[in-house]
Structure formats: structure tokens, C-alpha cells
Amino acid sequence: MTTIAFDHTTTDYRLPHARCLAYAAQLAYEDEEQVEQKAREWGFDRVRFFRVPHTPPFPLEDTQAYAMASDDMVIIAFRGTQAEEIRDWLSDANAPMVPHSGNTGMAHWGFSTALEAVYPDILDAVREFRADGQSLWFTGHSLGGALAMLAAARMHFVDGLLADGVYTFGQPRTCDAALADAYDTAFRGRMFRFVNNSDIVAQVPPEPIYRHVAEMKYFDADGRMRDRAPSLMGGLADRVKGHTADVFAPGTDGIRDHYMDAYIARLDTAAG
Image 1 (cartoon, rainbow, N blue to C red):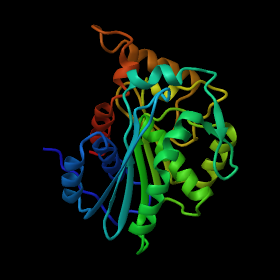
Image 2 (cartoon, helix red, strand yellow):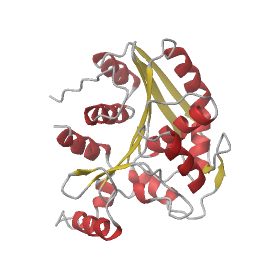
Image 3 (tube, rainbow, N blue to C red):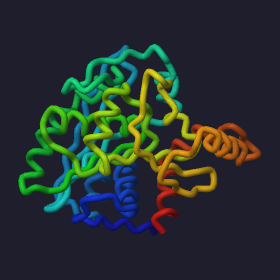
């Protein structure tokens, strides 16, 4: 049985904590009863859920997240979506951008709209749960990673609350260069974007209009975690290796590498 033990006193980057936050991001896909049960097992005695439905033609059914809190730590985890559901929407080079709150740049319209639906309630929960100065963490997979990044940005640039850490898994590009640069400055040593080899969602929407934040933890085709992005040629070679790893389904690893289970497996190994 997999053992997850949060160190509630953590305030900086540690690989075991990254692993724990990956499990918290995965838990966002479960129902409320399972979330509450697991949160209690992990030492969090307060849980709150956020869900706002969207109406067509908006491409997402709803925005979902949960918060869990202890005497020392508050975690906000956003629910994501799978590669097949989000890939086509994000592959559009003409996807609109809108000004990000705080006049720090531009962000993807869809992500901004999805976040806006739940942000006021999340901010209220953070203010309530952090009454005693608990550390604050954001996490999410896929779409959830994009929302975690933008929520932390808004909370800092607009509401003056700087998270202790933002850990995302398979996050798509979310914003323009101006917001990415401002984020990199404000969240240096706090933001860590995990990318599993050929993950297709981490490669969209397309550059140069959209940008990633700089800090990346990269798992290569052999599952080794690197503390920086590979070079252009090295990255291409590593992705080719990943594309040909499965002789029965060559070229499918772009989606396979995106699954949260794949990130969990990589982190289980890396954290030892």
C-alpha cells in the first residue's frame, strides 16, 4: 500500500512534499466523500469544496477544486481534465487572451473564465483557514495546473497573499511573456512545473504567443527527473525515445505521459 505522509511544517521545496502534492492533485478527481476521508488520513481536519457549472458554448462543464487545512498548512487543489478533452481546445493558435488581474500581463481566456467562477469562494476559504498563519500551497494537474498557477498569481498580485508553493503537473501554457516574467520573479523558488517527457498538454497552446513559467522539473524518457529543461536537440531526442518506447503503440506517449497516474509513478520512484 502506498504511504503518503505530509510534513505539515514544510515551507520550501522538497521532493517528498512535491510527491504529496501530486497525490493531492490526483485526489481532486475523486468524489467529496473520498476527498474528506483521505484528507483526514493525511492530517487535515477541515475540507471545503468548490464547484461552479458552466453553460455552452464554454468548452468546460464546470470548475472544481477543494481546500484542506490543518493547524500548519492549507492546500488548494484544482481538478483537471484528461488530454483527449483539452487538447483540441488548447491547440488553437487563435485562442483569445484577456488581461490578467493586477495588470501583470495577459492570460488564456478560457482559464481565466474558469478560475473566475470559483476564485471569490477560494479566497474566502484561504483567509478563513489561514487565520493562524498556516503555509499555503496550490496544486493541480492538466487544466487544474493552469488554474492553480493563475489562482496563486491573482492571490499575490491582487490580494497580497503570496503562496509558499505552487506545484503543477502536466500544465498547459497559460499566459503571455509579461505575466510569465512577473510570475517568475514573484514566485522564484516557489513555483515548480512538472513535465513528464512527451506530455502533449504541456506543449499547448502554441508558442510564442503563450509562455510557460520558467521553473520546470522534467522527467525524461527513462523516468529520471532533471532540474532543468533539456536543450532543444536533447529534448527532441528524448521525446523521440519516448515516442518509440511502446512498440505496440508508437507515438501514443504524448497522451499516455499526460495521465496523472504517470506523474504519480514518476514521483514515487524519484522520491524513493
